[in-house]
Image (cartoon, rainbow, N blue to C red; front, side):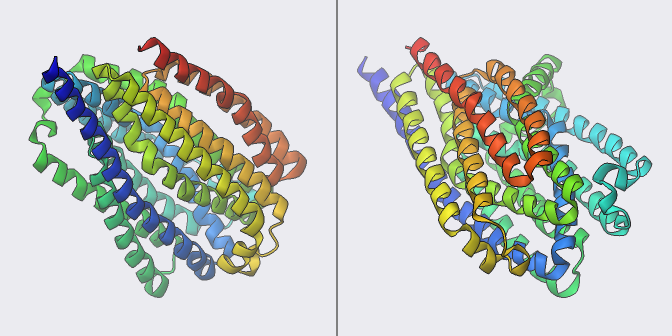
Length: 446
């Protein structure tokens, strides 16, 4: 009995330590990302002009859509690894790693072929709108460059999820910080020598690819058992990852595709490159700010999954409470800062082209961001408690409503009302339903 208590205490201490280390290293990485965004966006606008930055934002929106084709294999892998390690099933961990790698590689090749056909066959103004006619010479090289980089990320993103499943998220953060340094240097080179949209795509996303490649090599050296070997590939495991990945995608990736990519595309078709630039800045701010919440959520949900697999419900509930409190407090502080300081910050940060952004626009965006963070916290806990299927069904309904409401709100009042409408739907659907599901899962785990 005493030995069991001591063993459980050791596992609890390990989970606490992994989260603390992940938060500390993530702060370094996210602070670097935030600093990079703060410096690179105004530099890019100055060098490329607002229209050029709008084209760059349109490219990012398009490339972000490619992430949907990854079908969530990585997060499903992380959840499976955390449970396999907790239960001592090392062979399951080997088969999960190998099956995920080769499945992801096959999907990357298929996605690359399909997207290449689209880029070759479909006129770009048909995709982006008539406002982008005549910009094909700028758009096309950037799209091809980004496509190649994003397909590489299909594979290397698995490394991040593997680290999370092993409760080693801190390693991802350290390599992410190194990628920020490399990206900053690459953007600086581009400003002076290659002020082109395609090179900005290469500098930002190519640096991320290099950092993830180095992280992959380090992972394989430290954990030879997760190196992908064809002899460990199992079709039933790959099928499970694929189907669970589709479910996860419906729950999480579709949210980003609708709210980041689809709505960004709608904003561009409605208002041209200038509107795309403004929406692109808001998306960059969302990613930048959400990164500070993910400092805690990213290491917490695999740890909660492991704790529940071991039957340590009190620790899992305590970790969830900390996550909810931190994330909610951060979102509310961000809302207040946006309303009070947003117009002043934009005028200094982004220059005269964005100086006239009204305070009501920041209030609408701040409201959307609060809803976005609250949903993210519930997503993390739904995944940690093993309710991905239920999450997918609820989220699919919400994302469908968001797309419809966003379209009409944009046509009626522009970007501000669209953001407010998106936030309202998010709070009304997942914001109310998901916390109840999380609480029910913890109650049933007793």
